[in-house]
Length: 162
Length: 162
DNA sequence: TAATAAACGTTCACTAGGCTAACGTTAGTT
DNA sequence: AACTAACGTTAGCCTAGTGAACGTTTATTA
Image (cartoon, rainbow over all chains, first blue to last red; front, side):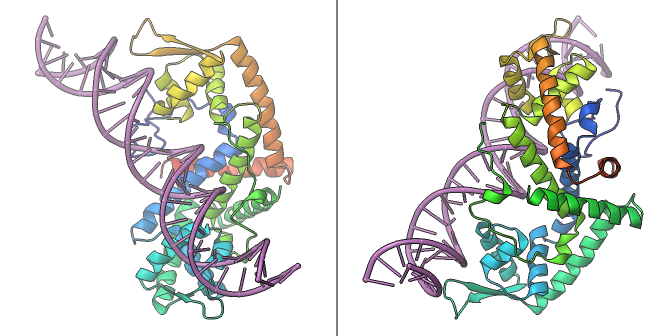
């Protein structure tokens, strides 16, 4: 109990870490997990402060970058399941960041497009996310950030198709 | 518990990615998440093939490295919540990899210690995990692996105390 | 010494994210 | 015309992470 280090500051029921096994300490999958969790928590905190989710950013980005799309297409672009896309678009549409209307050319589909308000929102979120990224990578030099991101990208490509 | 292993390639409802927004593509938190998920899936597949979980490895490692401990102490060492530790130790005890007995010196506690069978199991898991790590980091040179792990370690320390 | 607080093991329950299944509707294919 | 597949949608599942509460036991304090 002499250890003052605390994994996460507000946990009620998960006090200071004590001698984590060194075998675990350098385990890539564990490192990835822990970092992902913490990065996610950080991002979620910041984003929820403006009533946003990371998925909002993903969808708005996709619409802005690649233009209008059906929900299924958006799902493919972003990696968000189409079953989850429904509620997500409900939120975005309700706040007028996107418009959703039946596709006259294919009545199975909806056409989703970003609105002006959506573009404004996207800019806002982009700025926020830039800040989050800075906070996340604070201890790294620009070169190291590039390096880390490139390594993660390569890893990602490798795992995508193993 | 016996979970059908499922890779990215056999998803039933989430087909090929189409033009993921470049804004997202290099986003650290997203990269971390995706890699963590995939690495986890890989590890879980391999481990479940021998009826193990990553937590088993964590607990056995801790017992081997730092000696017997109470459940709460194990929880602190490994980062596993003590509410989850209960079932975990049930499994390990049932397979005779650990022994759990009331602590005579403090009757609130249990003393948990690793058995010989547990040590054998730990060796087995360690070998497996070595393989998993190799597969995970296949595209990287030894130097790059070091680099990646060190960067992740630094990131982890940063996020631990932000 | 008595009262109070804290730690322990345990059970229960909740949340978020990832994922599958199925259904009715519409479009393509044979 | 029959069959297959894509679409949007709803519902539900599983895992991982987390908090709450309870009865028991030890430590602290009044």
